[in-house]
Image 1 (cartoon, rainbow, N blue to C red):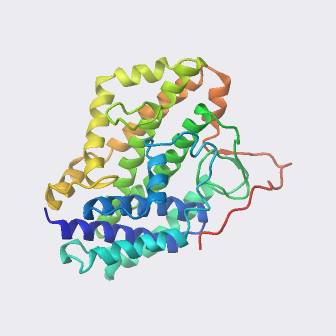
Image 2: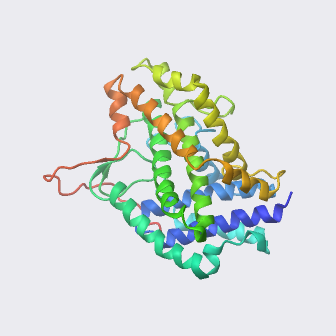
Image 3: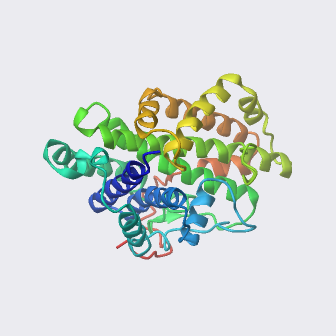
Length: 337
């Protein structure tokens, strides 16, 4: 149903994120944004019925906590593969396969006028604040895409480090989306920027949940933090089990999952685009943040039961506030551009 409009939606959303990449002050932010283009491209492949980018799909699947091969991405950094030289071909592929854009799907933030001007003014300010809060300085960051040269990362392998790498990566992506959403949501000229940021929040809040508690409805899902704690016998996972059994949590998770599976991560080709967007708008704006907080609180409660788990939980993004440390000689990465 209205496939040309859905293809335009994916193309325009990807173009919006490419424009944000151009406005980003740091490669970490660029890579966070590029992940959404990867997600859109994989959705697009499914819509047109042709899969051409196996490696990008492999990277997407790991971040979305399913279809992970043995040992893949344990302690692995995605920085050198998530670069303009791999993202630009995805954008070109989407644009070529879309063809003539459906006028109903064009984004004001890309066309011009007040929306574009506000977009170009706001985004650099949001990114500057995010860089200061989450990237600048010497940090301990166990996150697949947050390599700054001034960051320390765990290099051990195993189920527990892997689970937290995935969880922390989703948390970093969520944080950036929430910064954009909170700053754009009250401006009617930025409605599509707000919608796409909300979709990212839904995507990564659900993925945080799936990294914490295995998604048993997906046969390809991999163990979350709860399952790893139980299998290793380190600490206990009672807080996460209690969350999994909480009817209010399940209802909230399902409401987020319903929208997420139809517009981001996957594309519902059988429902009219207008209805999909109205469903997104109808979902309370507080839903992703509520899901985020429930999952984060349960993870921290479970982590407090053993020092080795708490250490990994604490290294989501830890600023080393020590004046005696002038610099950290981190492993260099390839530039995004």
